Image 1: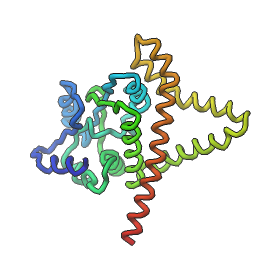
Image 2 (image 1 turned 90 degrees about the vertical axis):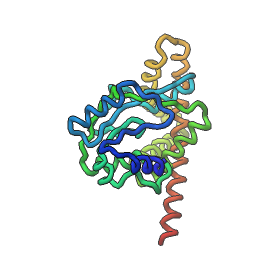
Image 3 (image 1 turned 90 degrees about the horizontal axis):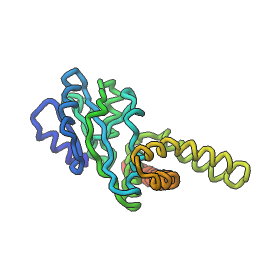
Image 4 (image 1 turned 180 degrees about the vertical axis):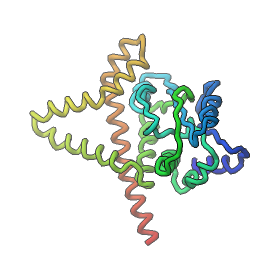
Length: 246
């Protein structure tokens, strides 16, 4: 992915580059909105994305993985390269997309920009529509890959450590009946925001809303398991790579 992006940018002739993914559907004013941020002086213009979800499974996945626009914080948002524009100088000064990284290249570039203090501005109405993976196996593969890339690139170590610690602690405490009540309360709190998002995506579908009370937590468990497995795989890959270079 990063190789393809790099080749495209090298072939472009303009000082501002807009980026999306091949299977995304762009809103008619998407480019105009990003260009406006760039004209106002941004180094990086961050757009947003909404799900293309054709079935209940995809809605549950979208609710887990895509924040509501009202949840966004421009100061901390880490944009996907499915909805993004940037100055060529910002791209080059950050080292570009890392071609040694198979997946997660956009987050790696985001981290570099944040570390460098780039002017990153958000327009949540600069929207592309993103196709959500339709099956359990494709969803597992996607989030396994994301987490594997995180480990290889050294990204989000605290976030992944918290995930391992949370599930590990819950597994230990589940052996004791009183603790199971606390685990249940914690699980409800953990799932509450994605469940609310799913209700927004399922307006007018009361039966599916009821199903989301189970479907969304199940999707969270699936992708958390994929992320933990992927992160371990990435750590092993990173360790073997370092050993080979030592």
